[in-house]
Length: 393
Image (cartoon, rainbow, N blue to C red):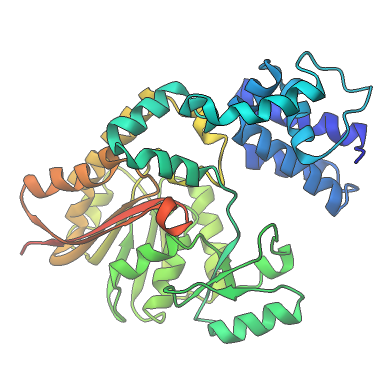
């Protein structure tokens, strides 16, 4: 297969910005697509696949070409994708024949190379997860399909499936998750459908968190780290718009996006609150149920964010663990005695998950009801953790 020079150069530039300037891959792709509206569906697909796989398999590709230069990494990826390398693509690396011959040697390389992760992260995974690390990191290197959550304030799951089919989108039910749908591998959702309000893009693992809160109609629920509000919207649907969901965050832009999404989703019970220093005091004892979807390493989302493993540093992990501990110490004041706390992360590391919960329990005042780790290896979903606890009255 042949490729277009401008598209090849664009893909390499995006990958270079991710590696050298630590840019966020999703944002760089979106900016490139916005700046080049004439690129067709096939063009965008070529660029996205190239960049995502070069970022995902950086160390494997580096082994294949014996080079760390982005142009060489792209060349190795295009060989893997079945493209002929044109004469105009100059790179300093192994030849096409050498790349193909080295493919058989990947399995014999150290795990950090064959799974394409930094050495320090591989060492941490072994310390925290032991023998389970092998399977988990392998699962996190698989491409993720698009999962949808049906917004039951606007449609049933059957109605959503029919509506999507009318718009030439095939969606299947996800066993065990009553509101979840999944698209065929490699398929995406057209923008007009994303903005309709009947469905939300939300990983299946993420859809397990809000039901653990068990919100009831008429209650006051606080989502203390809501971001743009995927779980807040799910909570509003679960409580049938009866009661109040407070979506709180330190970022006003994210809260503004949540307000737009809530309007589309007809989630009239949802109210946003910008977090201020006195928030825990202002809302002391208000919540019947409290969700702390804490800042974390994000390691459970490497399927969708392979660039994260190159940006993340050990010092950042230390900082997020400190933030998690602080949130559990301070924000739990917003919960009534006898209320239910759900602590959640999108990490698979015990130091961010059960160890934080055990520290809270040991400090007194909370009892564990149940926990729900979501393993990428066992489920195929993103990695999550959630624990439900009772605030002793």
